[in-house]
Length: 196
Image (cartoon, rainbow, N blue to C red; front, side, top):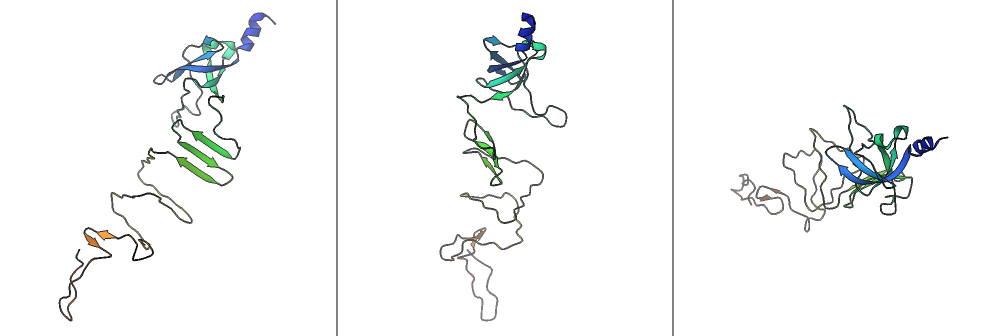
């Protein structure tokens, strides 16, 4: 085997570190053992008309390069490798996890069949025409406040606390469910509507 053939075969797969990212162009430059590539693409899960994904490799990320015909000029990033600076975000095969630099994460635990989305102090936004949550047992909203900007239609009972002496109040405008008043209008006349 000639030295040229050995070099080409040796260049088929290379390990490098992303040095620059062109977000608008969807390209990176990678340092592979002192050789800085030109602007090259990275492999995405989908890139067609029906579905397109985006997960850009960042500077400092260790990656694997595939170089067709052993030519680094045609290289593309196949994927990333864990390293000491950026270790694996999980240590069990039962867990699938995507972790972000601000501490946010999305994970699915097959052992407990639990999907967890954690966004710290950020937001979770869902935009759609109709949204449904089907829970066979219960839904818990653990938050200081819940705000509905439109009509609220409830087909079941509404309970505001179990103990009437300590439970929260329910109001319709200024009328309190716990402390509203009615004025008597005579022995046989109905009372007045509820008053604050």
